[in-house]
Amino acid sequence: MEEIKSSYRRIIFGKLIFAVSGCLILIILIFLSAYLGAASLSFRNICQALFKKIMPFINLKADKFAMTVLWNLRLPRIIMAVLAGFGLGVSGVTMQGILKNPLASPFTLGLSSAAGFGAALAIVLGWGMVKAGTFLIVTNAFGFSILAMMFVFFLSKLRSLSNETLILAGIATMYLFSSMTSFLQYISDSDQLSGVVFWLMVSLATATWIKVSITFVITLISMMFLMRF
Image 1: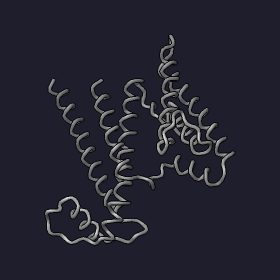
Image 2: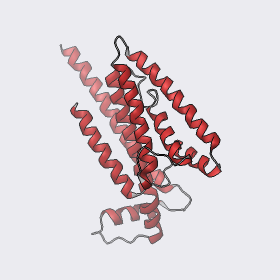
Image 3: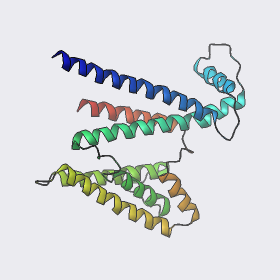
Image 4: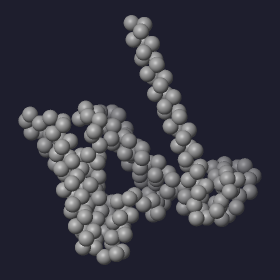
């Protein structure tokens, strides 16, 4: 019994060290991302602009140019990238837990390819599942990923269908939507093609604090439901 407890403590300690190390590396990468860019900012400028906004009660002088670059351009993109990675991690571990297979992910189940096709359809042809205006690309990507998920869920209800077969069906779905996305890229013009490519490569150029807030709320609510169930 003591050996089991000792082994369990070692496992928990190892996971704790891994989590703390990951957080430290993330903080370093955030500062590095805030430092690098087309506009040259010193580490001192970044710290001053950061603490000036976070702690306005401190009488701290900060360069206006650094404030604009950091808070209006770089930080929204950095935080959006962190939220996107966090959301992918949560969705991946959820699918692996449900299917009991480490290969399960939004990519292997075809959800990412379906979302890419939905976005390409909105960019190239202007078609959408709903009229969403500015959010046409996002809603279209979400809608097609839901369709792909429903297809995989329908397969899961079939009798004597294993988890491995579901993943194979997901991979087939991935190739199907990838081929249709390639066709849309083929018939698109140069501007539409660059828009699709940048979207598929996850461009953060249009990240704003409003979009960051929406993404944060959706990710938080989704995570709470996933932890509950």
